[in-house]
Image (cartoon, rainbow, N blue to C red; front, side, top):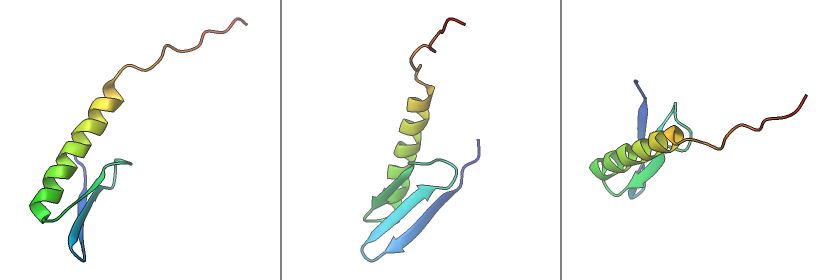
Length: 61
C-alpha cells in the first residue's frame, strides 16, 4: 500500500498528515519526530480498522 505523507513547517512545529488516510495527522518539534509520530498514527489507524466490528443486524422480512 502506497500512502502520501505531507509535512509542513509551521513556526516551531512540523505538521504531518497522510492524504489518503483521514485522521492520520500529527506534529513534532523536529521533522524526524513528526515522521515517527506519523508512522505510529498510521499503524494505529490501520490496526483499529482491522478490529472486528459489531455483528450486522439481522432483520425479519
